[in-house]
Amino acid sequence: MPSTFSQRLFGLRAKLLRRYEHGPFVRCLSGLYGCRWRRYERSGGQPGDCCCSKLEGAAFALLVVAFCLTLLFLYFWGQAENDYNDFDWFNFGHLGFWFPWSVVLLVVSAGFFTYVTVLMVGILISLIFSIAATAVLSDLWGEEWTTLLLSFQVTAPYLHLGGVLLMTALAWPIALHIFRMKSSVRRALIVGLYLVILFTLYLVPLGLYSPCIKEKGTLGAAPALIGHRGAPMLAPENTLMSFEKALEAGSDGLETDVAISYDGVPFLMHDHNLQRTTNVREVFPNRTNTPAAMFTWSELEGLNAGSWFLSQNPFGTAGSLGEEERQRAGNQSVCSLQDFLQLAGQTHKLVIFDLYRPPYGHPYSNSWIQRTLDVLYNVSSIQSSQVLWLPSDLRSLVQQMDPDLQQTSGSRLPLEELQRNHIVRLNLPYSSMSAELVSEYAAANISTNLYVVSQPWLYSLAWCTGVHSVTTNAPQRLRTLNAPLLLMSPEEYNLMWILTDVVSSVLVVFIFYFHRWRERGLAFCSDRETTLDNSSYCQIKTEFSNIWSVSNCQTEKMVNLATVTSGPSQPGNPADPVTEDNGIDSAQSSSIIRVRDTSLCLTLFLF
Image (cartoon, rainbow, N blue to C red; front, side, top):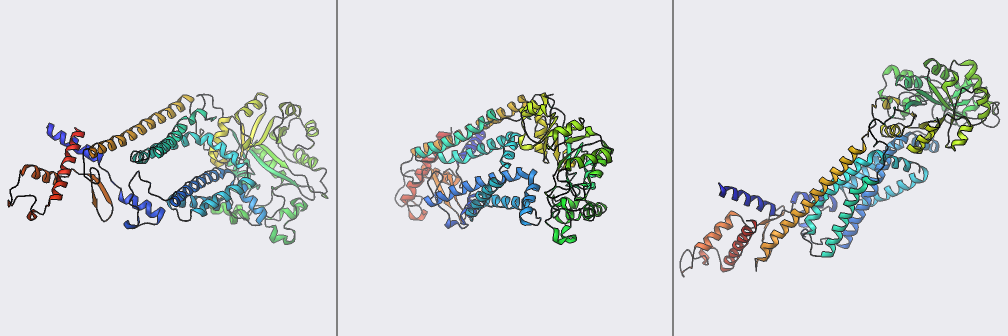
């Protein structure tokens, strides 16, 4: 029994000391990155050797830079999904036709990232694309970098976990190579760089801030949802159907944009002209670029404001509508402010709207606010307390006329000025999100609304920050969230990252110790030899790869045993191992003895 256990232990340790070249894996990497699919095309260098030229080293550095930039841009554009619709509007305004360029850019960036991850050919194209796209978007849409920073408040704990796991996995190939390097300087540089990155990742949580890491019981109520132009993912924006869909999805309020027609009827329209959301090109081909406010209400009523939603499919959601809903969406018309307020009054929902001043020469260019208030008081049934009054023009006069209107500011102003203007709510872009800011205004009884928040992670962050309401394109999606995507107590988070770091450090130490133990064991046997060319290994050439293994195979043991027990040979003895009849000459005999010494050396080291 002890003998069997010893044999198994010997076999296990022999396997641990055995070196493999991992032929299929090496072939795959050299083929993908160097187009060297055939064995004779691959380099014969061993781990620890400097097996690449300066040109190959520069190409590898270029690969790493391209990988990092494409990864950064892919993450940046992926987190900007909340504002894809704004990006498409921007392109529509400059190109004159609608196309989902945001999705195209996402697909292209994902394709380049995949290409860089797998292949090296064409790496320069990927690098140029990443640099150019990042530079252009930073110049035209620089506020999206704020979105990127905000995303870290939700994703940083998971990114930290992924980074630690990646660096832990890299410990194996790094340890494999450094213990075979002959240059102590290169070894110190590689180990030093690896440890700096690793310990930096270990300590990242100490500087991490996320409002979603908070004590249990301190999370407030979920922010109220205000439908941005209704529910534009489910129906054409700023139409009666869109607002009805928003209410069905559970919206607590409705947001829109108000313009004044040429004959004084307030109507709902976001764009300066009618080109994007109506069929004005077909009905009035010579007035395509005419401001929407320069049309009479009868002309506006005759336009179709829904067919564009089905043909252009701005959010990629038109296919989810049933046949009856598609017909209804395709027949929507321009909505008046009166109908909008009537719907909100009947359902007791809040309303907020931007009010556009008519252009110069318009009959109501100086009385647009009074005309809007006339509709609010005399035509609709909505209560003044349901209206979040956003226009800043003539605010003091409007407040005197109707103190029940909820005065709302669209800009961050000093607290004293807000209180002097009787501001009770702030309407800010989500990039202004700050827990300190929200708390400061809440202490002065000023609530905060953020726009436009459509992604669950962004809504989760607003929830944890204490925001009172958000304007959203996707009330049907956000209403389903019962809790923020990230929510844990400081104790739970500390336990998570400390446990992750401890387990990682133990694994890294074990991996480095294992490779050091294996290399020292093989070096110990190599020192006992005097003439064996390749240390204590036999190199077996095969058609597919080179396999390095310890020379302790059963055949060699039998030959060694025969060599030791044969005793001195007499001339002419058929059993003489030096005779040509046995096929073993004197050189082979000495090699066998050296192999025998190697096996004995390994046995002494293991036991």
